[in-house]
Image (tube, rainbow, N blue to C red):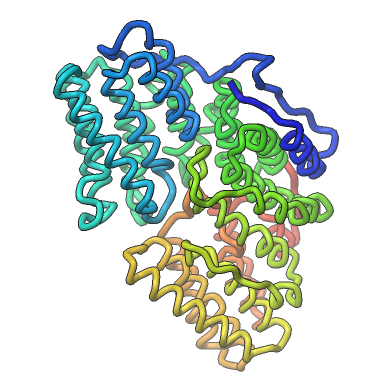
Length: 507
């Protein structure tokens, strides 16, 4: 059950002022808990079957902190249930869709849980259960020396082997499908793994319509521009399947964002934010606030967006970056704290405010880069080229640090930001050919990758910036081409629509 406290409800009410008049579902202890229908076959004591299924349902909705508590509840009643430690290990792995390396502390806790599962499994588990345990162990195997992508690929292969051995095990099919999506390279524009996962999940969803993992993972499988429309039914259904899970309330907004359905995204994230605050999942609340901020700004709702910005310090003060709570990993909370102020200034072209943003150091340098990106663009547009060059230097330093640390995805994202700021410096310093070359390179490189699930979209899409640059250079027809191309990836964005002279539309 989700427990509420007066202080958290009050805080949720403050944040809910960004959506005055909207209602939210109360799934606290008085109303019962609704997580969907899951059944995971085990050889653990029959008395813990319901508890185990509940913990797996929480895991399927990425409610990792609650899932860990649920698996410990299983162990309190059956200390020999090896698969409970499997569940703890997977929960410690946390969100498989989050780009970036997992924190060492979480990996070590997951490794210990996997090792305990292996030890108990050798005594009490079935061969099938030992296969599940061995698969999860791949995520943590020699993590200090084996890179994360290699371990994720090993886990996906292990889950595929389980499916081949136990083809009637629908849970194996489901966990394999999300492993496929998580391991898909962000540069693969065939989306072959996502499509394979989608086929698996949709076939199962037809027979298990109340399974939370199926709707959830269909959304993740199709959370890319060319495929997003395929997940609309899952997006519209998931919150009703597992309304007690804050992430189930938020997750539909991934597809609503991909389709430019801004009010639907606002509604989803307002409900999610209330639920996340009620359960103490502050990283999840910050994540929902970032998505809501993005949607508000696309509708030109500056007053409501400013209310989100104004409540950010109070929300950040309650956020513990070392804790696993809801679906959003700590990095997502840090990301939102940096992204929300940057979105506020960049979407409004408030260049003086952008130039004055102050970066905050963290364990996640790519979040600091967002502030320097906004500062750089703000400095250029206010004529402060000295600070624009300083922003470029900071971005270059962060990009090198990320690359040296093996954070290849985020290193590339920062490189794209660096190119975008450099293009505008070139423009300000009267080098139009260099400006166009750098901006085209930024746009092409952004097209070659995908946004991560941690963000609703880029702070300023590179092709949209390219259109702005072309307008400044007196080339409106070429600018229109770039705006239209940007809208293919980021539909219904207010700025591109306004520049094209069509006006911003809502839902």
